Image (cartoon, rainbow, N blue to C red; front, side, top):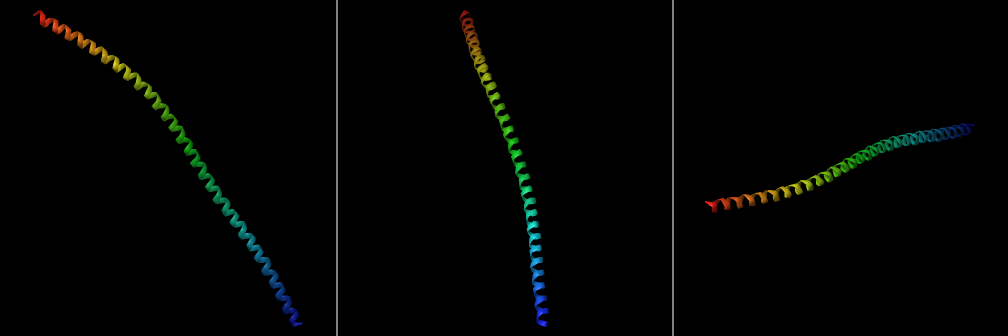
Length: 107
């Protein structure tokens, strides 16, 4: 009878240890899953923020490229006007030189 009680106590204690071990293991797995979900959520939020920042940078870059093209066109027009004004000034200087030469010859 003593052996049967000892055997019964050992079987019950093994059963309880298996039960509580599985319960703790399940709790640990659930905690690991919750931690992983929280970590993945933070990572996803950071990636979304980075993606939005990249979109903003691309839009800003497009605006800058558009401004540069606009300025390029304006610079080309200014250079053309500058060349035309320079030609006119050269023509005026030639006329003034001719008048100066004529007035020097007349004296």
